[in-house]
Length: 195
Length: 195
DNA sequence: ACCTGAACACCGTTCAAGT
DNA sequence: ACCTGAACACCGTTCAAGT
Image (cartoon, rainbow over all chains, first blue to last red; front, side, top):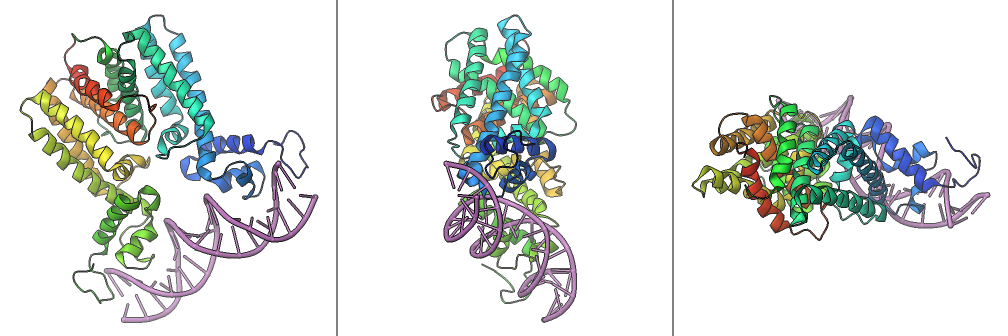
């Protein structure tokens, strides 16, 4: 587990270890199992130790969410890079987005769960990176006019679909694949110039 | 507080009283304050009393969420009824949807928070009612072909936008009003026959 | 049938004390 | 500077006992 200073009283890099522990817990047992004490246990320290690195649980969760956004940007980049045209790239980003959320629902929910301002620097930075990536895709596909509103619309569609499927708030009768196909075209159509 | 049998050992209608208490707590202090024990306190019973009416907290939360969906359907109906054409009705539903979520963010989040199957009958019924209302609006505006995929797309847009604004996951620079306007037209455009 | 009170195993946070 | 252990006020759930 611990690479260096295994038997030392001090951990060395507890802050990062707690984030890593949190990610593992999330992947393995979901949001319900993600507690401060569980992270401390997994990192091999007392439950009071995290206090020196994160003032409150929310701060730890914010940094875990930040790593989610970091992975997220990577996944979307990878998806877009496989396509040639701007419209195809945007559609691929949308599909990668939904795939990420459906493959790793726990961390995705954490990323969008907290209603608090979440002043974590790492989170703010990662969220900005994700937004800029989206802005880039939308600009390439639909031009620079009114980008932020268009990007908001695109994000809304894709986030809403991902969330509704994850939390199972759609009737079991809906064909999710068909809906995803419709959304993929709707993505470009919604932000194109008027017909 | 208690209308009948105020001094009786038995409550009379504790089940409904707990739901009412939960709604009040949610409205007043948000999701973080909504606990089983808080509901019991507000209803004037011991924290063990709810067990006889709800097997687990999740069941109580499900019924509280159900009342949210019930209010929700009413609000959307009211919004749609003010407009004449099917397209205008659909747009009005969308705006009422977002207004509901932004006015009562706590209960809205509860309605879409839980990832569990939530086998509450009341919740299932209320969710079905909401879905049917949406199906009706979409059918009137865009015809009966492929309705469930179209309805899914509409719900995704509107839910995604509501959620992103509530949890503040959009950069502060975006003009939410402009984005909402773009979405309102995008709503019909996304489900219209191809251009 | 419905409710209480005590108990159990959790949780986040605080703080003196250790290294 | 960083960590521990005990303490505090919470939480959901269980269960014998009361009415």
